[in-house]
Amino acid sequence: MKTDDTRSAMAEVPFRAGHVALCGRPNVGKSTLLNALVGSELAVATEFPQTTRERLLGVWTGEGFQAVLVDTPGIHRAKSALNRFMVDEALRGARSVDLILLLAEAPIVADAEAAEAWEPGPGATAALTALVETGRPIALVLTKCDRLRDKGLLLPILRKWSSSHAFTALLPVSAITGDGLDQLRAHVAAQLPESPPIFDPEDLSDRAIRWHAGERVRAALFANLRDELPYSCAVTIESFKEQRNPPKDIIRASIHVERESQKPMVIGKGGQVIKAISIAARRAIAELTGRPCDLYLEVKVTPNWTRDPALMERLGLHAPVGGAS
Image (cartoon, rainbow, N blue to C red; front, side):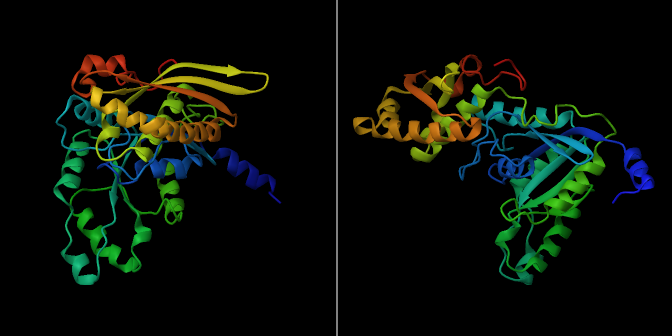
């Protein structure tokens, strides 16, 4: 039972709230970590790099704090207009936050000698350099630590990272097992400024549900198409109607490809591929909304959209986070 003194002390603890960017190289586990922290499959996470194209805000509300998590695309060497957009999105997402979490994979090393000899790669070092230029405080989050059986091998790896920058903390975690997430939670909460909540505590994201529906279609593309084809696909939600009786969502979406030769690959022989994409996307959307949905997909050819910033904007890739649905 809490005494009056205990209640008084708890009441005096200030609430903290702010923005935290999840940054790093492609496929280091940013979306997986965001989902683990907010407790919902909010961000699309696949085994493929560069799945995330735009910033997504995930609202992580805990006891005494609220961290607005900015899930950013992976920082990589950009060549096409699409890739440059993705890297710009990542850096824009980091410039105005209260804390940056730089995510880097824990390397798989066989023994202590290999761990001592390990050095961060040029891609990870370049990502750190770009983030340091933002002037924001940075904590290192070493992800996928469950892959290392001997956790003692993390010590020389963390020492190498600590010599490259004055991080606010070095935090080894596994979003899969939950190891290290309590320490991460405590550090993030301590770094946030005193502030009332930014979002309603029941909110999970600032994105409209139709945006999340489009992301589920994109995830189904990655799951059902091979090689580079998913990277040449964009999804636009043409209409999203919420039927009340019986409760059901009716969604019409377009899948945009760059070349005519790609269209039959998305559709598949006898429509088998597009059918598999539709089934997977419908299931994922229903899990998100808690309602069944009818999903109608159409494949369109939008030539060279990944190379044309104007076409990218038309397909919604320059829409700001928090934009209207």
